[in-house]
Image 1 (cartoon, rainbow, N blue to C red):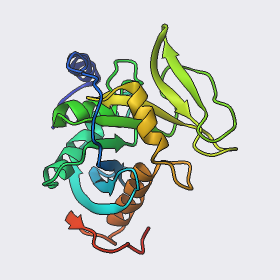
Image 2: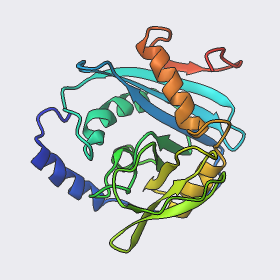
Image 3: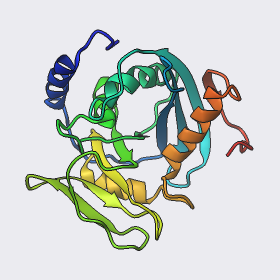
Length: 232
């Protein structure tokens, strides 16, 4: 999908996509998805997965898995070009779409407001939230060392996201709106998704399931869950 792009063309495309960003309040959220990608070093195969959970009680309802081949190189700030095509393939297999999708990466917390969550959100026309494990961009004030404490992340006087402390004595995660949702609601939703781990449940479970897919424990396709899975 993007293998023919160079970084100059990719930058221009991000700027074009960013003009389409919209932020609005979501109502009656009942389902939330987590999305993640796994791949073997020096391999062109992307292993993509998405888990669908009830919200806010975080009960796993279904998951979808797919592979996608790409040679687009990894470079910070351009993650969407490597991962979004694979995530869109997974998305196509989900008949009943979730109300919001949390992606392992940034939304507008990005030099061109086009992290993987914003990139996917625009192409899928879907409400998305970015939840990154490391800070890519912005001026960060570290939150207090207590659970659910936050610090705004700013750039040139604009608030682009939040550092959220999910556990004490543990590094924060970085939350930002992706598309079709507000920054404050993104933060509020992620706070409701925190379990016993640093990573909120949607992307934590997506990470687990994608790794099991990459290692051959699970097969591609859409899978409904009628009972708890032992792999979680």
